[in-house]
Image 1 (cartoon, rainbow, N blue to C red):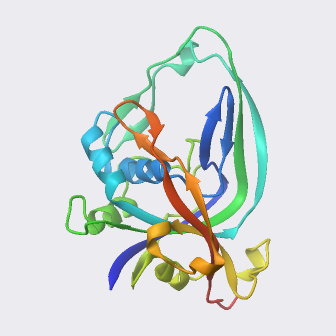
Image 2 (tube, rainbow, N blue to C red):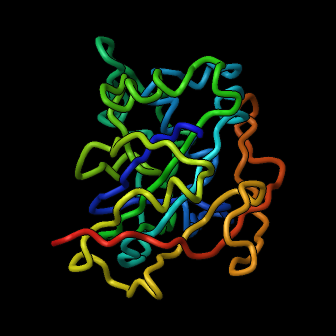
Length: 247
């Protein structure tokens, strides 16, 4: 049996960023590998300069996602002059130390469009391969209980409505672990559980109900040294059976 951590993404708004085209920031159906790496790295206190730690964490991370509530998608029209003096200074805080921002990338007003998902709920199970490396699953679990920085779901305005850590499970695979995590009550869901199942995404190599799933190719691995997305991987999109819980 393998050990997995379960996370519950429950927030007024979240953003699972996909490829950005010009000034249009679209979202995808599930959190990217780079987003999950960044989320855990943020909890662990890693910074952008910790390239080796970030690459190691991303290389070892395995996760699967279930959509318990799809919510609504909307596009935000944004205009901002990042060069204004009041936008330059401290803001986010690493535990015990203030953290600043570098200011404007230009002296012009930025106009952009960013998609967000509102009032959605997702369940994530994750593990690290190999399990004996550093950080180990226990370190990640503790970091999620007491993160080094405020955690957010994709973009900094997307703050979770509750602690992310949901529990720890023992199972044979990611899909099996995902099926063990209870969903949100039916009264909170906005799509039916077809045959007792909900939409899910998991790594192709994890197996799962392959005959009832579709292989999709994604490019969501980040080159942390150069801050660009690279490579491709295969993900299965299908459904995972859930165990209903009483209201």
